[in-house]
Image (cartoon, rainbow, N blue to C red; front, side, top):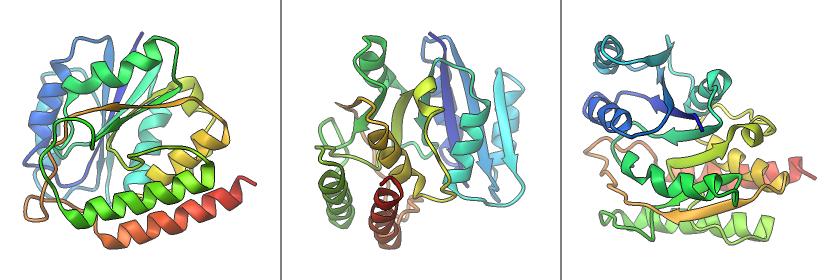
Length: 227
């Protein structure tokens, strides 16, 4: 089966080359789609240099439009049977594709989330762990489920399932909306352990407590929308 790998990127000059090299080192029939969301550092140049040597689709936003827009633009041009989201920040490892793809290839799942908390991981910020717990706890109450890592940056979907989701978010709330839509359609969602190399803010991490608050609010709004 063909795999489309969507790589949303915003000012990731320190990691984008290494991530793309790791993606292309995987042994799948694949297309790789980089969506540069208005980067102002060397990211566009690095991607362009990489594109000169590899078969790479590139979507370039002249100005920042948000992760949600970047992902939706990537989904729109994907042609694979399975779509993988691969963040460009170096926190997630393409070596774990084998784990997130297996439940789909076995016919068990429509979507698979790579769980950062069960595999090998760099110890990261307590505030982020608490924020993740709150977001997942509310999602589980609202949708009567047992999800543990809603906001993971490594997800895989059957493309025919992904095409049925009503996605409108422009920013990081896309993670919540993807999950809300999957459960609204009663798709089969699996979680598998993955490795995780979390970054500090000094190393370029972008999510803050404000994004956590927005995620909680978005969960409530998307749940009301689905009624």
